[in-house]
Image (cartoon, rainbow, N blue to C red; front, top):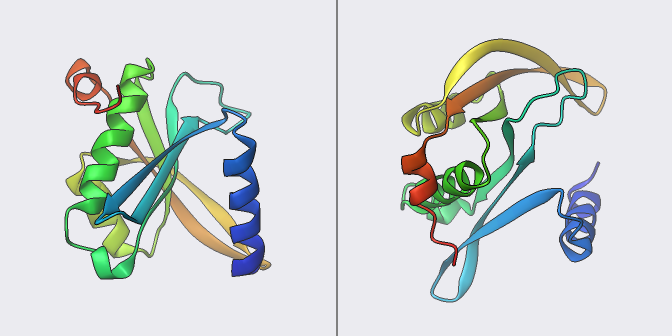
Length: 143
C-alpha cells in the first residue's frame, strides 16, 4: 500500500466514524502534531476484553518533546475508563526506538511474536502488553 493509499484509507475511516477505534490527537500551537488510535483487540482467534493500540504517530520534529508520552497517557486513560483490563500493541521487533518508548510507558513483551506482511516480505513483530488501572482511568482529560 502506498503512502497515498494509506492516507486515503485513514481519512475514510476517520470520516466514517464507525466507532471501531478511538482517536486522540496532540496539538501544538493549533497544529496537529500527533495522532493515536485504540480499540478492541483485533485477533479473532483470541477473544479478549483487552484494548489494542492500533497506531501512534508523532511528527519527527516533535519527537522527544513529550507529545508521544502525552498521547500514550491519554490513550491508556481512555482505554482504562472504557473498562479494558490491559492494552496490547504490536511493534516491529527491530524497531528498538519504539520498543524503548513503549517500555518506558510501562509496556513489556508478553512472548507473542508474529510476521507482519510488508509488500510480500514477512517482517517480525513482537506483542507488548500493559495492565490498566483505576489510576490510569482517572488520568483521562476527556470531558
